[in-house]
Length: 333
Image (tube, rainbow, N blue to C red; front, side, top):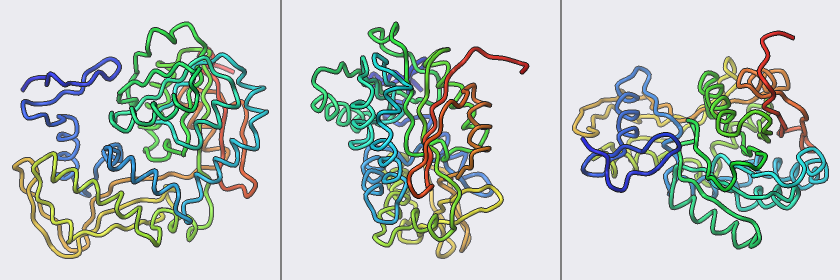
C-alpha cells in the first residue's frame, strides 16, 4: 500500500490511494458499512463529480423547496447580511459554490477573497472557475479538501477575517455527533473571531418533506443509486442495481428524512473481493436529512463552538439561515 503520486492534499492529510488509485477511505467506509447491520454508508460518498451534478439538478426540481427558500432569504436580507458581516472577509465555503446562492452572498458583503472547499475536485474547479468569471476582481482560491477535518487555508487569506458559508442544510445530513465534530473542525479552520453563515431546514409536514427527497421525476433516485454505480466502478463491485430501488422515509423519533436503497429480492454481490448479501426488503441507509427548530439548531451550534447571533426565515417559514460567531470558549455563564 502506497500513496499515489496523484494523492490530493486535504488540509492536514492526503487522500490515501493504493497502487491502483482506489481511495482507501472510500473503500474502508463502504466495506464497513456493508458489513454492518443495518447496512449504512456515509452520505459524503454520494458526492463524486456525477453525484455533485445530480444534486445541483435536485435543487431545481419543483418538490425540493430548500434551495428556493434559502435563495429567497439571501435575496431579501442582503442588506442585513452586509450590515452584520461587513466587507473585507475571506468567504470560506464548505462545499463547491452554488451557481445561485454563492453569488448572492458575495454580491451582498464585498468579500476580500473566496475559498471554496470540496472533495470532488473536478466539480470544485468548475464551480471556482464559474465564480471567478462572475467576479473577475475577486481572488478565488479553490482547495480540494475533505472539510470534515481541519483544513489548512491558503496563505493569501491567513490575515483576513473569515466567514464560513455552509448553505443548503448540509449539516442535517450528519448524525448529531458528526455534526458537532464538523462544526468544531470549521471553528479550527476559521479561528476564533470568525463568523459562520449556515442553512438549517425546519421541521414541517411529513408529505412535503418526503416529496422533497423522492421527486416525481426521479432525480433524487438517480442521485441515490449513483452511489452504487460509483462502488461498482471504483471498488470492483457487482451490486445488481436493477434489484435495488430508492426510498425516502420520515423518521419522527430523530426528526429526519432517511434515504435508503431497498432490495427488491434477496441478492448477493461482491465489493473489492468481499462477498455480501441482502434479504428482500433489507436496505442500505445512505443519507439522513435532519430537520430543526430554533432550540435544536441553537444547541447544535453551541455544542460545536459557535454562538448564534441572528436567524432569518423565508416568507413561508420553511427554512432558516443562522449567523453565528466563534467567540472565545467559556465553561460558565
